[in-house]
Length: 388
Image (cartoon, one colour):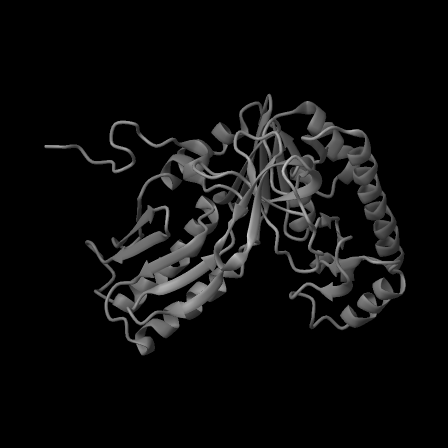
């Protein structure tokens, strides 16, 4: 589990690194001047789109470089006759990528510490990770009894670790946040930002509070806030250049390379394309006694780590070394599934395809590390090859 958070902020840009015993596991970059996942906007419809199968979509101006895309079909949200020029409240589901604008939805979800408030939905649901908890149903029933009118709730994993009174107070606070969004929307002129989740450092602290031991920041103001909030619960450290101090810049550079070398000499090649992410496992100059099973097992662990670190998403196709018969691949799938459990944005392991490749589907919330930190070369247009 994550034991160290490293937070570095420069002007509007901030970066958070998640470490396990000094080893980089996950990165998140944020620009306060740009649209982020979870932000709520009063958007303005710019034009209508006719989609396949008679469905409808819209482009919406939310003060981003590109208009966001809104699919009219949303579960739990009533159909409305929307028109160009109309203003409406939307929430960012996926941040913009290099070639595409953000994706937005009308069904707002406000994430608290222990609950998620869904004012456009009905029903109370449990996070899949707490369904087996002995108090889960009692907590769910408590939230049901304190639900008012048309609203929905999701109990997060941490909800069963706090008192029922804490949950009740959080329900009140989240309702207030939504009411503030509605009131601001009545006064503002589209497009405008109605709500932002703020500094995500505190979200990560809450998520990993059980295993977290150290927080490193480059701001004395943030250091002071953390000490006031958490006292001596964590080791809170100031560093002027924390990413450099912890060797993270070199680790980030490594995570931008196509090839990842395995300890025993094998290698993994990762290719990000517009259609999918292709990952190939090659024995190379493997020194592990020629064991393909051992090589693939080691590769599966590393692939799960790289997916999380690089924030790879969409369709991910893996070609492991050796035979693709299920009886040989099954142990590798077990390792891959176990390692994927450690990812907060856990992907869905589809399984083995008829072509002998392992397929994963992982939801796209933020741009990949490559999209965030690099731009496509104008000369080679991303091929990375030189003409003879």
